[in-house]
Image (tube, rainbow, N blue to C red; front, side):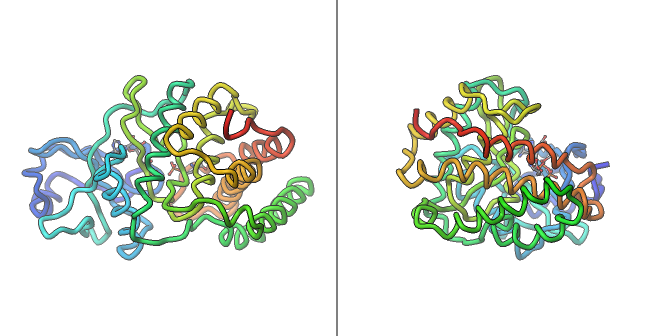
Length: 319
Ligand SMILES: Nc1ncnc2c1ncn2[C@@H]1O[C@H](COP(=O)(O)OP(=O)(O)O)[C@@H](O)[C@H]1O
Ligand SMILES: N[C@@H](CCOP(=O)(O)O)C(=O)O
């Protein structure tokens, strides 16, 4: 079960009147979510997605929803939140924060080819540029501070070999985050979780990025590294596929050229991006939280990727 808070058409017949969407005609729970309760909602004005936030609060959510609104207004393909008649992007439903956003066409591309990676790279660069004048600030809540807190919680569960890797990578990343090159990296709002399942395609046409609820302000290069580490790899081995990497990075670079500091930081950043998801998967696996993660993702996938990034230099940011 992935709808934690059930909603019926009756429940929302009054509630929907605060939105300029006409009457609600149909509502259908979406099974695949793991964090929130999501529904496809048909109204007199069209197709939307209704999300009831199970964990994020009224105070935390404006950063994400206003970011989506900011990006959508600037032509980046992301779900556009629908404001209430009073101009609010959030409205309580069954005592929890809820939002309605536009429904993206298409489906996730789980077997991406270079053409898909190029589309993602170009849109990611457009997203970074469009976020430059976004006024709200929130750090990446899964950044170095969270890695420092989480490492001691998961270390006791690891084999000696894995614990050694985690400790040494943490030392490496802590030192890297203090170096001059790191501080020269361009920063702004980043998606921070742009995996294959968070992008929609209609054939080869990218129709949008979604699931912005890990977004925060961080280096743009971190976002690129997270994306490459998922879209451009052989999922069994973690090995990078050069054709997909090249397609993604060249398309990004054509929109927003990489800087010299970014080129210098690329290999450490790919390791940082692998470490981030190794840690979160270890945390979810060994410290499961009720109703938040139904089937924890496999942490060893990102341990394998981290080892591979340490052992084998990735193709450079520019070809
Ligand atoms: N704006 C949207 N347009 C179309 N489908 C969406 C949209 N938002 C979510 N979905 C669908 O809902 C599913 C779950 O959404 P997701 O944001 O991944 O949920 P969770 O944050 O709970 O994991 C997605 O896989 C997708 O099929
Ligand atoms: N992409 C992360 C987990 C976050 O899940 P999502 O479905 O909300 O993107 C991972 O693979 O560990």
